[in-house]
Image (cartoon, rainbow, N blue to C red):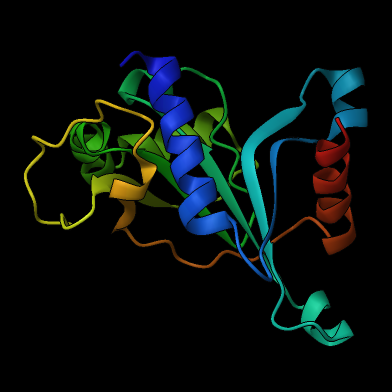
Length: 186
């Protein structure tokens, strides 16, 4: 599979396994800072944003959390300059086991954190990594698991390889929900 097909597979898997279902709200290809970006050319696009309310009360909605997901097909995609926009309480890179293994030295040395800080100064360094794995395989399995057919998302799941710490969101609930709503209408 090429990068585009892997990205599509990972996106479909994320939607199916993490974002869909009762009480789950998400939008894809969400543009942040649209108006400011028109002037300063600093618009940011996020692959997926999920809103998770505490419950369905006014207070529960107002205290909900935003999860940001950036889908990356390979290490080159991570360092491509196309978005590691981590502005939510929880932020994840969604990728393949091969990409995770390729990134591991950069994660351990702090190189990825420095890259994010330098190139995406608004982003939090609170991020986790989710990896697509065939069902029945878990964190400690070897990397001989390759995505060969994107039509079999039922046979795959997402495993958290690096836990995400919770960040303190700087953008308002209203602004983020508006950005999600605008993305749904595009």
